[in-house]
Image (cartoon, rainbow over all chains, first blue to last red; front, side, top):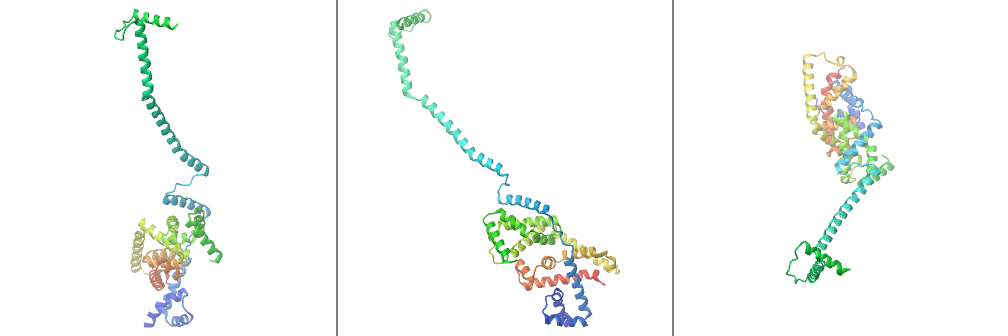
Length: 173
Length: 194
């Protein structure tokens, strides 16, 4: 019985063909005389045979692997954070648009700033205002001189205004 | 694998390390068949095996830096496929249901055997039925016994490689194989009586 217990531990290696010659011969001798161990060995052999002959996975065709590769690439792009690679032409156009987009934005901002600065400069230019003021004063003084007033008399509107125009046109001609 | 193939594999791995996707596709072509076979034997159907294999290849691409060449690339790859398959089963919560169902089936079969002693090979219609019984019996094994048995007897890997894949001793793998075989023999002997 003890012998059978020892043999039982070796039966797997025996059936799997992983025993040395000496052990294999000893075990074969035991199996010739022990029907219980022989039956177990037979059952193991059948199990292994069934496992080996079990319906194998049919080798998938190229269409299967093509689809597999496409799906794998998509999943890999998602995992690595890269966008799914578009066609080269589309990718080039995309790269150009990404390149020019900030340039256009910077140019617009620069133009807006230039217009603003120029407007402010024009509006707040003191020399221009002084020159304009001086011109107005000179014109008023000239008109008063023509009118014989000293700058305190306010010309009435109507006939006086027409008279003033006549005088100017007479002197200028 | 001959020297030329090994050199080619090494070259491809180096190119993948530098981010070459074309080299990665070449590696996929090299290992897809054996990867699919292992995944199929562990998860049980082609569609799930395909998903598990894609998970495995993504891990290969992302963690190729982790392969230092201390073991063969095939061993490293097989380990990733096994882990990806088990992760896939865990994610889909199929591992538990498959094992539970198969255990319930086995208990039912056991009950039927006690009540109906005439159940034998004559009642089972051919090899297909036997294969189904074997599949159920394999699914009823513990996880490690199942992995060892599948890799050894259905994928033809050696004990040494299985030990490297599972990161355990060869003697441990042999114990798992012995127990798996003994459990299968006990579960199947009802149908194997001549």
